[in-house]
Amino acid sequence: MEITDVIITAAHLIAGFILVFYAAKAYKKTKFTPMLYLLIGFAVLVLGGTIIEDFFGFLNNDPLEEMIAESFEIVGFIILILAVKKS
View 1: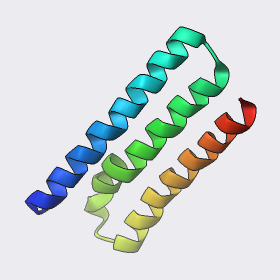
View 2: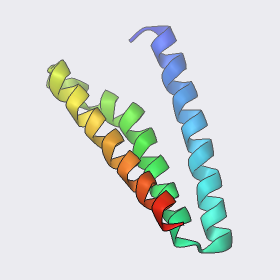
View 3: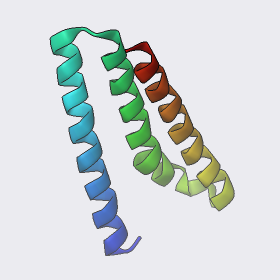
View 4: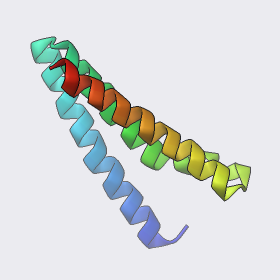
């Protein structure tokens, strides 16, 4: 993994978890169920885009790794759609 990849991944995680933090803070304050869905959706997107993609590197199968990471992102987007629809 090159240094630029590490920097980009770190920036992605930091920005993503800041978003998750503020969504959690908003849910805790309002107890609004769609905000909980936003929190979960953002968390799944951040995990799918960074940690899960790197975690499955041991498979040595790029198409399978990509499919797993994209599946997490798709699930995250579906949860976000539910959040917006319920609000």
